[in-house]
Length: 87
Image (cartoon, rainbow, N blue to C red; front, side, top):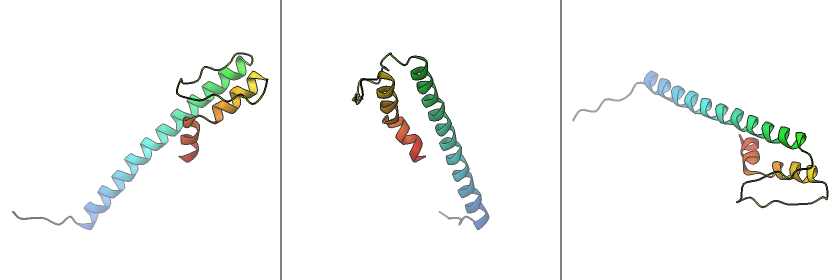
């Protein structure tokens, strides 16, 4: 079998395409998380006295007798929020 070496132009084109596609995915995920968190915060703001229903695998922490403050604190602690910060 005869092997062909890829030229520098082909390598640069391939590398650029991979980076572009990867960045598109990251940007889409970032805005998805941004909207998701905005919707959560809007719900908490509109319903300040109702405990927010978190994922059943998530441990809710109640630091205050004020439901609104507990909800805000727990939203900031969600894994999605940490993911958004890391992006």
